Image (cartoon, rainbow, N blue to C red; front, side, top):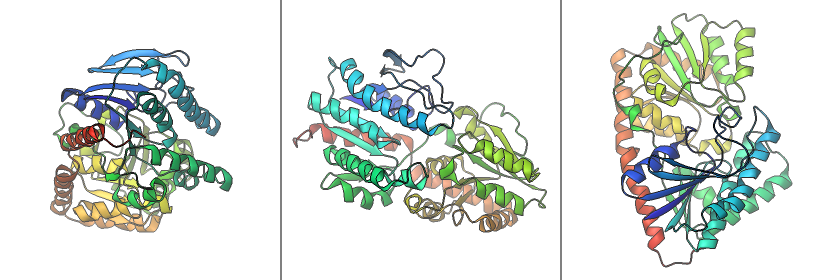
Length: 410
């Protein structure tokens, strides 16, 4: 089987699609990737690449075709909009030219925000008369309004029409959360929908080898670690507020790893409140994350108190489960339900700092044996439901079924 993967983000950017492509190639699938120029999360095009021009690379057995792409910039809404639009335009025009002589059985879209990146895939699928499978990671236009990027009703309605167009022209829609099925169905008409969750690299579930860099607050006393994007969707204020409530608990430390649009604001808040129990060491390579996670007493995931986020399962939940550490889920809905169902940790309502502080104290006061059991429960749940190899096999089966179906290509 020959698969064209369309993703705005790809290696050397760190996204889930990298490991999936590598595993598919190892299983004998011919995989080619249409993507842009790497610029996430710094907002500037990586060294060795340029904004203009098309590039061709070979990575771990997969051919990569790169179209021109305007970088997203640093904390720039205008830059982000131009970044999104440039991939849609250059992906459709330059992308279709780059793969003009290539043969595929199916086109697969890694549907991170914005879902508009599926448009080049649909155009190429139409040109080649091949079906398109879209893996939906985020709900649009709901995520636009929830994060505050767009509030204009007319714009949101226009985006909804575009999303409806995309959903109804795909051959199969894969959703990362069971709770996505109903809202996606409202726009998708009779397009088939299947639940297909995220996973993480197997290194998160393996014993850590080698020396782990020392980070202030990590491995000292009771350390609560957050890892990932520090943005509006993550409601980072709740961490600062909970840390303020717990500042007299000298043994409890908050370690926030990562970068994002709200990191500078978070640093200012920590300094203004003179909080010595919050540490923001910055962003580290993804390969160091398992080692850091294994050093933490508990792993924290947060989301804003918005209806859309009750349907979402943040990908870090799977990573935390694989790492085998107790989880504190400061969010509502599906993500909190998953952690509780697995017995992998404790949940508290989204954006409720007092409840988060109380939950941290409750976990802190449990015995080491009880906390260790939560970590084991999470890892077992991960192996049963989110194992990487098993899910890659499922994806290949989905793609093969679609490619062999006699139903129309659009």
